[in-house]
Picture 1: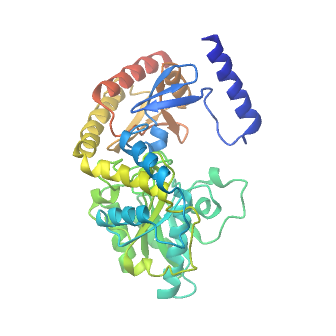
Picture 2 (picture 1 turned 60 degrees about the vertical axis):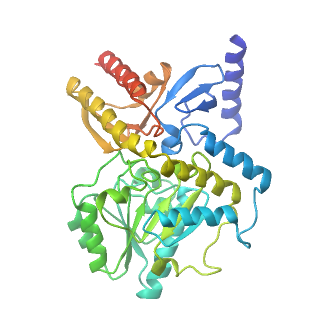
Length: 404
């Protein structure tokens, strides 16, 4: 055992030596995973309630995704988008047939999908409005990515600090405030971009009819509505896409995270009338939609759709999970402000910093996450079961009791 701890320390030391210091990494090295569980290099087992931050929707190393990757890797890993790509065509058809969209564009990450959405919205609006229509309205507390335009679209100054000047053309209005949105619209506005549920902003839910009203405002002002479903998509909220809960459709939608079942891939979906503004030479991605990524994503989506248990489980177990968190709120009213979320995208806002809670859970073999400083975020794989949730609730109850 001492050997494994020494090896673990060596890897952590080398990580600090050779990698840029862009993450506050926990002092563990995860080596393998299956389903809800991961193990570090010392052999310690953890229950993963982060799920790669909403990426591992089917759990770690789901057999269907693994087999799809293995088979595709033996056949064709990469080929240029100068040619038609069979797995890409299959994935695009699958997404279009199960969404509002008519066309898909594939890339490698959520931020890249956002960049594509910004370009498409501006291109469409200049073609169908005027050359001045370039501004986009997003929400305070939003998070859209780390590339420069995605960062400029993000309504959180803490992420932008030090990277000025930002890309011009973005305004921020309070989430859930349609009056502020109306006042922000000018003749230069081309689109409104929102997360149906704010993730990095602290699992903030839209108020009743908010998204429906935003859709109506966009229609009245001939603006595009973009939904950033990078975190909310792929079954995370109990439906394949979060917009389905609100009986409206966007014009453009971005996807990533859970799309590949753990494999990196992003997507930009749009209605035909908007997508037609992209023509050869206007947008591209060398690795976007490569055969390997598309095979993984196809396997992940087919599993979500074919196995009705997973989405049903997300809705049922999500309610069970939330009820457990609400009970904790009742037991610790001075410590817990609010429980919120949908499906298996849940947050618990605390009166104190959440970092010590995350650390305490990790030491006991439980991986959770904190965002916005004091919001515990839970995005476990959609295959989580009641006994695993019970274990987390019991652990949080004991930790909260010791913290007070």
